[in-house]
Length: 73
Length: 462
Image (tube, rainbow over all chains, first blue to last red; front, side, top):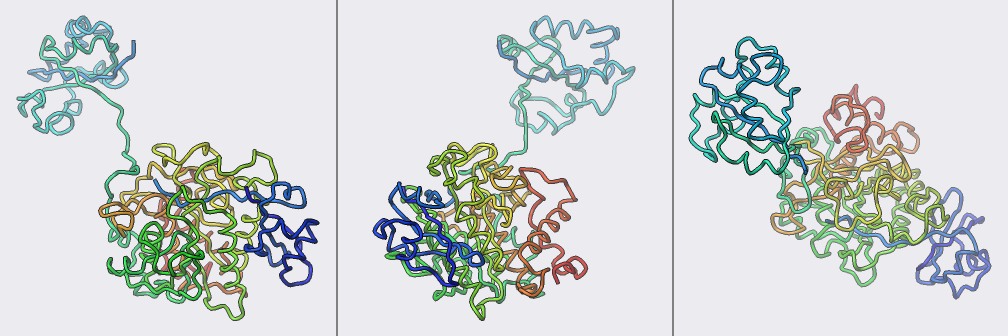
């Protein structure tokens, strides 16, 4: 299962994936390059990246990435 | 032996003829004793009728079983009762063991007849039930004609439908001339262009959102799959919300107001792969990244509306596993900053599938009810109602958009913040429903636009 890894920015701009990997102290190859870096709180400069590596959850603030679906019968 | 409830109809040629049933006032009369001998397990419910009977010295008219109330409709099941006979028929009720059913179905002495007395309740609509009313009823209940005439029509408001995509051709075939901002809409790579998805759930949501806000501009945010078996991840919603957040933070904003309608969520507890208390968990964790993002979007000025979900207690959706009380409304659907919408039909009956609170992130959920289970878009199939809280949420989102067309978001006006708009709508629902206290099945009441044209009522957000 993928996880979302949260990082704290500090430069009033979106970090690159490489910078995110450095902040997370993990190889950039463990991050989902197609997903990129997404902002979740522009005021606190909080971002997330996605990783398929389970062990990545221990590298920082991690969040589950559950399935979602439309509400049908 | 299980007990069954029954009521007995007892003909009495003369109204006074029934009185001897309890004639000695110390207990059952010979007439009643005859009945009890034939049904030895029967226990008469004296709270229902005996209390009145014991006090009788003459027949009491209102105790008569009047034609049309019970079996006087002429169905003839036991056939042949004349109006006169019915007028002289009285009723008592009680319980008996199942073993006496056979005897009860036979002719009893004195013309006494025994009938099943099942529990009755308001019928709540469930999936598979026929539509209750039409979209015209919804428009009428919301007062759309008057709202539109006064400019509460969604003009200038972006209405994002975060779903499985919108089919404009289907909407047009239903007489809906929808305006779509394709350039600011998003679809997954390889999926149909905005406005061209196969007609299904998202098209239903768009149709329902436009009921109260026909001049709103749709944003087709097509991130969900049309099948629960094809996985969509919450991280996909993060990307979609990112686009909406950028829209609100742009200078200048392309739309003064943005209303976001969401009829999706975590359908099954097992989809959240982490145990209660695990910091990675989503459905009951306010610090999850997506819940933070929802909070950011609301802070930016967007009005976010979520369906409560279809895990209601009467007839939950087939997908509802492990989402019992406290988790039926979960994740962002239960976020305190969003408007969480349950479902009610146009007769005012709560849908049996409408999820009840408390919410996982906020106790007082759902916030209110929106109309559902009406014949509307038929995007789910010919004759199939716009159903579920999936329909209720966009109906409510349309009302928000209608309101925003006259009271747009303005960063410099605290009374135009989403929190104030949400509070206003909850108060309006509560006012329209007679100021009933909050309840976890209906929230604060059913969404209402009844006082949008009342300047005194809207002063708090003007």
